Amino acid sequence: MDFNYTEEQEKLRKEVHEFFSSNLPSDYRPRGVGGTGTTLEQFQFWMDLQRKAGAKGYLTPGWSKASGGLGLSDMEQGIVSEETSYWGATWPGSQGIRVCGPPVHVFGTEEQKSTFLPGIAKGEVIWYQAFTEPDAGSDEANVSLRATEENDHYILNGQKTFITAPGPADYLYTLARTQDVIPKHRGISLFLIDAHSPGISYSALATLGIFTVDIFFDNVKVPKSRLLGELNRGFYHAMVTFEFERSTTGAAAGARRNLEELIEFCREEKRNGQPLLKDPAVRNLLADRAIEMELSWLQGWFAAWHFSQRDKLGSPPPEAGGLHGKVVSADRAQQLIDSLGLYGQLRRGSKYCKYEGRAANAWMSSRSTHPAGTIEINKIVLAGRGLGLPRIPAKFNKEIRAAVEGVGV
Image (cartoon, rainbow, N blue to C red; front, side, top):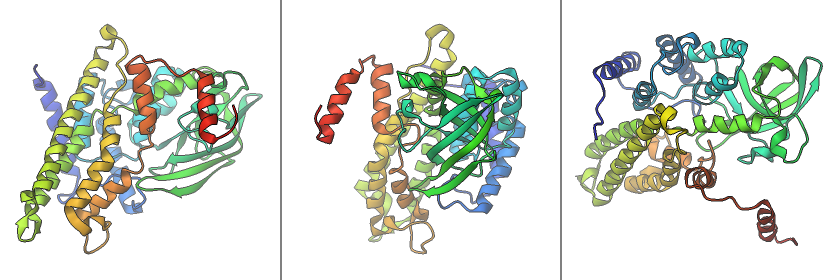
């Protein structure tokens, strides 16, 4: 099988590579943005670079030129994504780019497209995907944020929680209940909300590895023109949103960069007078990482290729790369800590930490695997939509829950 790229595709890769090489410091190491330790200076650096990338069209290369993209193919978009991930560029506007913007293409009106898409493509705005609530996580049918129709707008009251916050929000991509109906998922709608609307307030929720917020809605007015798609069809629109969110085409490139740096560290770091690279346990860890990276690379490019052939092959099967990464993350982080000994537990900032404290950071991040669905939810999606396995009837779910909670059925 031929995995090579065309001459034009290689030219594109080199152009993107040169962009990052020219705009990142020579001593740069991938750190991402939006974590609990991100400083204001770091955030501003990434916002500035995001705008530069947006001006080049690198944030949304597969979007049409009218929307601010480059109008490239799915495979070429994958090349830009891979190169971006290799350099560890985690954009503050990533939710708008990957999660919120694509469904606006699919379900949005022409006015909504012209209003929201160019700002995302240019890197000028930050979106939050505001779905999760205290009693509605992966079960989006339980959304209770209320949207009541009133004249030419809706009035929203309720709360969202554990919303990933990479920086100050400009817009909220929000699920709300617009009708009380059975089944409940048929009474939910999607809204595109100005994050600075009167009545919206935020409260920080610092978690392991990811910075999140509570969002409170107190009689927030949202124009009817900000309803995305059809009224009471928001649940179905959200399912399409998840298909974009769970894509991991560039994951292998980031893993490759991390592996290269880890190998270099193990060459230089010594224990008992010998380089770590000569420790059999460390060598096994590096070998496992290399195998996983190759698997991730194949999964990502298969997904990109299948999507490019969707007119012939239909909708791509659920992408398994994200689940694989979550499943192995905790074990790999623990192995990395064990390889560094007690130094592996020290966080970035300690003068004694090794490998820039990345082992401890990886361990904390591996405890925050809920974005885009927990491991259990990802398995359910793959079982149903990937393998075609039947769902458990609702009545059995109730019986199972009652048994677990120790109450009568």
